[in-house]
Amino acid sequence: MPTIFKRIIDKEIPAQIVHEDELCVAFHDVAPQAPTHVLVIPKKELVNLAAASGEDQALLGHMLLIAKNVAEQLGLTNGYRTVINCGRDGGQSVDHLHIHILGGRALHWPPG
Ligand code: AMP
Image (cartoon, rainbow, N blue to C red):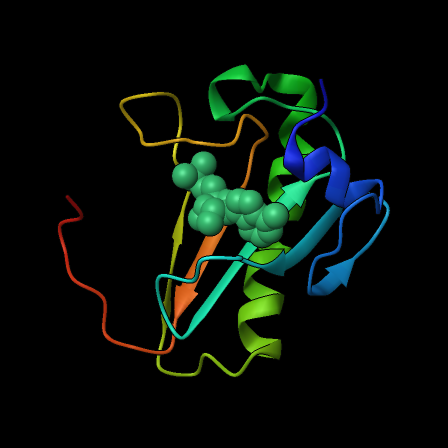
C-alpha cells in the first residue's frame, strides 16, 4: 500500500508543488501549522530518518539544501524552522521521510 506521499510523487493525488527535481519534491502541507508550511520529501521510499544509511548521505544533504532554497523562494527572510519527526514518539504520522519547513510567524521553543 503506497503512502500518501508516494502517491503525490507519482502524481496520483494533487499537491501544491513548489519544487521538484530528480531526487525530491517539495509541496505545501495540507494542514499548515504556520503561515508557510512546506514538506520536502525524497522520491526514494525511505520510511524515516532512522531508516536512512550511509548510502543516503548525498540525498539527505540535497534535501537540506532544497529546504534552504525553498525557504528563500517563499520569502522566509525572518527565519524558519526545519523539523523531521521520526517514529511514534517523534510524532511521525506519514511513513515516508519528510522535512517540515515552518515559517511566517515566530515559533515557540521547545516544541511539545
Ligand atoms: P508528520 O506528522 O511529521 O508525519 O507530518 C506529516 C504531515 O503531512 C502533516 O503535517 C500533514 O498535515 C501532512 N499531510 C498529510 N497528507 C498530506 C497531503 N495529502 N498533502 C500535503 N500534506 C499532507
